[in-house]
Amino acid sequence: MASGATITVTGGTDMQYVLPGDTIEPADFNNARSNLDDILSAPTSVSDLHGLNQGGISVGQAVAGTTIEALSSSGAFGELQNEMQSMNAFYGATTNVYIQADVIAGDIIESDTWNGLMSDVKQRWDSPVKDISYGSKSYPVSDTWIVDVDGAWTGTLTSTVTFTWSSSAELNAFFNGGGAVGVEGAIVDYTGSDSQTLSWKNKLDTLGDVVLAKQSTSAGAGTNAGLGQIDMTTSYQSLNTYAGNITYANDFANVSAQVNNTTSPTSVTVQMTLKDGDDVTSFQGYVSSVDEPVLGNTRIRGVLISPQVGVSGYTFSSPSVTQTNIVET
Image (cartoon, rainbow, N blue to C red):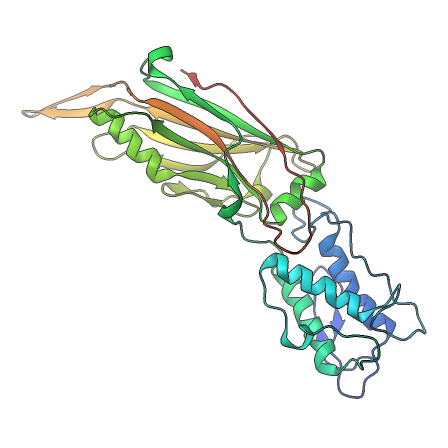
């Protein structure tokens, strides 16, 4: 039995380092296997950061009284090692040097090899959520407020984008695996010189994509509320607000989000609101307020960032995406 230091796995199964001369028992193997199985299984709740919904681990438990072998139907170190290597590939983590070379039939599992695996399992458990990668970004839906058709706008433009999965496990795993959703606003096809419109164009270009990840929101500008998918409720919560400059201090872009169910969500709805308020002007000491119209075509579109699986072989369910028409109020 392993006799080295205990490896504390908060919320998981504690493991044990081995010392030279120790015999690796089935219980030692099964403790490590249990943690990897939890990571590869379906998330148990919104707050479960470990579930990737990959169907669990492929290698079976070691049976009491058996020897830990390199390859077998259960209790196979080499197969557990392969699972760890695939997981590290998915997360972009460097595999411990002692388990980079596969253990094969006839090899003796040295203490450094076993402990290298334990270290990687512990590291992965302690950093369960993958960072989002913009390399997979797409814009699946879009709507544009067209000046020639809808008129120059003042007041407020609003549109919502809803991302829907077949199950709560699929949604939570998507975010655990580094997926994110959001919206982007822009003034498009405008070549004029109107200062109000150019101010909005610059504002939205600077704001860029506002995306909701598992534990955070990211944007190019504005004030983030520090919320992630894990924090969402069935009421809209503000994710980011980007206020105007001195001349257009009452103009702002706001992005908020909600889920359809707090405990078992299957959809996330992200809302963008563009508010064109009164503009403060000053001439020869006189201050006045006037709401100048925005002359450019104004686009709001959804942003989808899918988990990057690389060579891991993992798969994640993509959501269906719908958008409401932009509405002026």
